[in-house]
Each structure stands twice: as structure tokens, then as C-alpha cells.
Length: 399
Image (tube, rainbow, N blue to C red; front, side):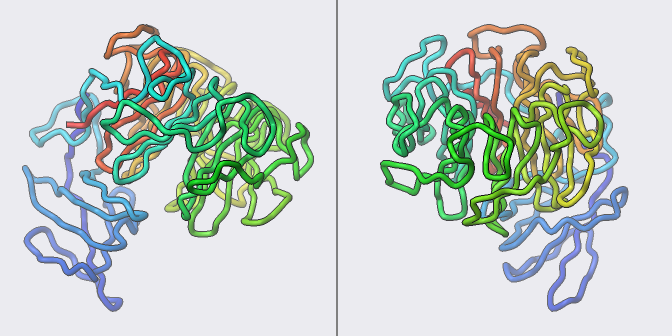
């Protein structure tokens, strides 16, 4: 499926508080401040912090952007129509054949080149992935192109000591390159500094509970580097917790009103993504079959994908989704676990596009997935999928 640009964007260059509009041709200084907006949204998006390089290609702007210290190469558009073909070049398109970049297909194990039910994959530049290797009770670090991983958290044994993990299901990296792990069955979140052989508990007590200092099967984590704040999908408490740096108690950021499908409730929240632009959380409410957006300090969510309380396999429905990712244009990527596929929901659209896997079909070949739990993107919008049932990580190249 190709996604096409139909109308030009407006790019505003601001220097020392002055703005000017241009259509094409300017040379930009790396000190310029650049904002991108669309006429439909009437909203300025501060995507560029360091430098920008622009060229015009078949009536569309192609940008190489620094955002959160990462370089993205992408197109910006508005007025999308995913069901028709325009005369301009496609801007989002992935190869249907995945490349195994970690693990051995259908061969679970605990060697350096094997995985066992990986639940989450996290990409970090320049070309490194971190994997929550669930059944092996460890986090593995792979350089793309290498067939062997290195254990960077957990010692591979099952336990609750500080050097151990118990079914870790999620991993992210903080601003100091610390490895933040949802140590799910230890009911805690652990921070492993680079090169450390043991972790530090930064949330939860290790005992399941619903007090503000406790967690119950934490399943997702997201990190806001600007405020050093950690958000945790507290799966069995049907809430998302907020932990400030150094705090032993958290506060409820979303949910906490019992499980359910109303707009003040969550139901088994799993994957989590913090969006600094909208200052909100994208939350996978897995048993509610939805992806919701919950602004910080708000008391309710807005539906962005799925239908609350209804599972299915058509373009508008999900079947026990587990993870979510966001690209710089605000498009949402969903690991639709029980449909064995990755769904792309364009910004503002309620119909998804299958970009990896085949709906309701599982298998081991390079076009199929088997219960994918995790999804992430690199800075070129290549897709990485934790293909859990196949014990591998699949890369789907954008072209």
C-alpha cells in the first residue's frame, strides 16, 4: 500500500523571531529554527532542532530532519486518501518480505544467537536494537547485521535478585543510555546502567499491589527525556503510572477507574508511547481492543484506533493489540497480535492499512508473523517487529 501526497506543505523558517513563507529554493542555515505545518491542521509542528536539508521531488518536499537527536528522512502531507492513486510519488511503503535481524525462525533457545518469545524491540541509533527476551529472562543488545546478541540486563536465570529478571516484557532507553526494563513478574521496573551487572529498582516494590508505590504486572514503559519522567503501563491494575525521577511513589497518569471500555477507563494496558508534541500518552488498552490517546493531566481519553469492546480482523478493528509506535508525522503503528499483522493508521484515519504480515494468517516464512507483540521504527522509518511466536525480530525495509 502506497500513501501519497496530494497538497503541498507550508514550511516556516524562523530566525530571531521572524517568520517567512516559501515554496521552494531557499538555502537554510543550520542555526535556523524550522516548523512544519499543514493548512488542514493549522498547527505548527516543531520537528527540527538542529538542521534541515530540503529538496523538491515530484512536487513534494523531502526532508532530512534532526528530531530528538535522531535523523528522520520523510515526507509531510495532508488531505490523505489511502484508497486512490495520485500522480505524485509514494511516500510510505515497506517491502512485504521481512529480514530476520535477531533470533532463529522457529528455533527458541538461550544462546547468543537465539531468542525465546521476544516481547519488545527498541531501536537506538546508530543501528542498535534492544530486545526484551521474555522467556530467557534477559535483555539482548544486537547491532544490526550481527547474528549474535549481547546480554545487557538479567543473567538469563529466573529470579528476583537485582541481577535477575522474571519475564521482562518491555524495554526502553533513557537519556543517559540507561536500560529501563519492565520486569513484569517481579512487579517492578529496573534501571540497568551501561556495563552494569545488576539493576536498580526505580518503580514498584517487587510485591504486587495497587498502592502508589506498587505495580501489578507492569507491561509497558515510556520515558520523557525532557522531564526525566517514567510512564508505566500497570497491566493488572488497569492504569498508567507516572514516576518522577528519584520518586518512590507514583501518581496515576491514566485510568485507575477499574477495568472497562468507557473513556475514563483502561483494560489491561500494554504498550505505551509518550508523544512530546501533543504532551500525551498513546496507550494500548489491549482487552478493550483499542489504542487511545490520553493527554497528560486529562481525565479521559480519545479513541485513535479500534472499536472499544469489539475485536475483529477488518480495517477498523483490532484483535488484542499489544504495542504502538508513532512516526514524526503523527501516524500510528500497531502490533495487532491476534491478527498476526502490523497496522498503520494514518494521522486522523480510523481505517488501518496492513504493512507487515497477512491478516489472520500465521506462519514462519518471511511474509508472515506469529503473534507479534512489539513494534518500533528506526530513523529511516524501517519497521522492526518482535515476532514473538516465531522467536525472532523482523525488519521490514521502507523503500
